[in-house]
Image (cartoon, rainbow, N blue to C red; front, side, top):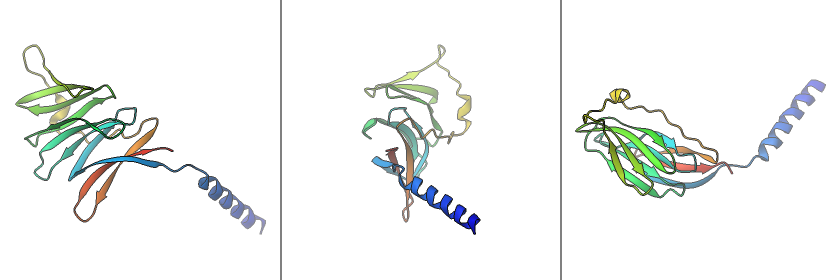
Length: 161
């Protein structure tokens, strides 16, 4: 009998402690894509991500901490694109557009291709798209809302409090 009361007390204690935890708060949402392949948080509430259309053409999207579009690059091929680095000051991604290349994007949305001296650049990890996501930062995290029916995906930003 005392064992049952002790276990019940532990369960009630755990329940009350969970009830006092602050819930995550949705801050913003963006897009309505058929597929979001990978997401990379910028460390301050914004992120970049790779999205794919039904024809498999893709885009790189960069959003600031308010969910406002900073940069968008649409691709007219179904070849891979991947995010290399994303901070609140710059985005670097790799893709194939006539040849393999890296692109550095400044905070104002200015994109600058990074090329090697002989105009060839090898991007060995782009043999296929890297679906890895880094979706958390010190203030919150990103989630994907899949809408059924329709199979559309929306990126959602949550803050921890």
